[in-house]
Image (tube, rainbow, N blue to C red; front, side):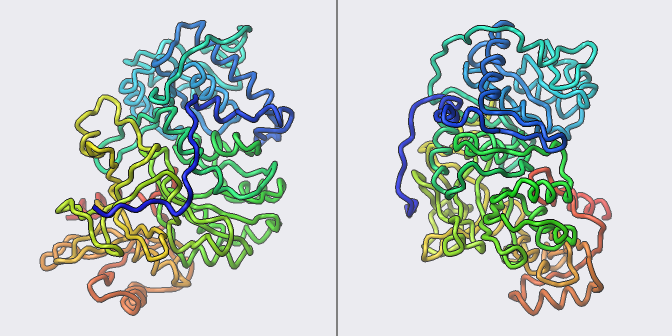
Length: 521
């Protein structure tokens, strides 16, 4: 077995609840803003967040919610999200976080699977939430913000004063229950414990650099592990301010970053691409910006370089998965250590292997294999899915990530693509992300996704769906790629489209394009 450890020194991981860890030092900045509501400018201080946490925990206890039971949050990025999630976590109640873009049927499926008893939402989402609770065990809907007839307002829910119950919380107790498809199948409840989150926050704390009392625009969704980790964990623990955006709009995002003199941003690849290329960015002053962290999906080093040159910033990649709370690796926070062409160095207290997915044997150093990770951030398992858990986590604690990559001689990780998305061309494996990165360097290409297309001779060949921003034809783009890759990796088909389907976290939804391709026969 060839096991790699982080080059970064191990850190101490305390045994405490998630909420206690995040707000350990909050008495130093009680009157500083923890959140500013982007659309309105409403500021919410750390003192107010802590008061809301206390009041939510009391409200839950009054209604009989206790340790191990589940509430759900179905809301966009609003300041109150932190109070609800941490209020629940502080007394051992689990929060399952749902995508606000979900249909009522999708939400119902998660409410039933998680056995949620209470649902927090907003006025705009209330009709969908009301439809979704049919058939679930949700007994009450609490609406954040504007009052809605027939629902409990958050103000009324938190009207009870007094002290919350004292609850003994173990590191092994589940804190948050986001949903992820993992390497296969429908979304499953990912049991992230207090120990997982505290451990991963401790692992990532020193990677943030020195940005005292800084603001960022909270554009990553709070329902997603990446957004929870950054905005509801790392930044609150450090006393920073999150400027919330309930819905993404590029110009609003850039305007808020300019107005608040943001020094650090966290984004997903589609936003990185827009920052690098969209003309609206040039209309705003982003001279305060120093560091951009991109995660949730691989990003082209060429596009990262475009952004670095355009705005004079350091760009780095972070890598992980919901099942890993979510951070596995990240580049440094200086130009010398960022290495945006890689997924960075392992976070502390973490072990890594590269394994042949067929033989399950470790590959030689420098060769490609599936990433297996072991550390305090590895999830407890999938809720009520022991078989899926056993497929994902080995008996000795290694989580199989489903990503293919390798480690270079300097210890930096290179992630090529998802194992399940590799194109099988004859006897070769082709990573769609590699071809996408090449195409994104073409001046006429605005965005791209590559999928496998069935082929009688080769089995599968690469096909590119391309969004143009200039003049180019299919033959020219295929020739451009052919000049830059090994012959078996060449793109064999190109189709021009208006947009590439993507998830809220920025991952290309290749399965939708694959389904479209297959439907054509």
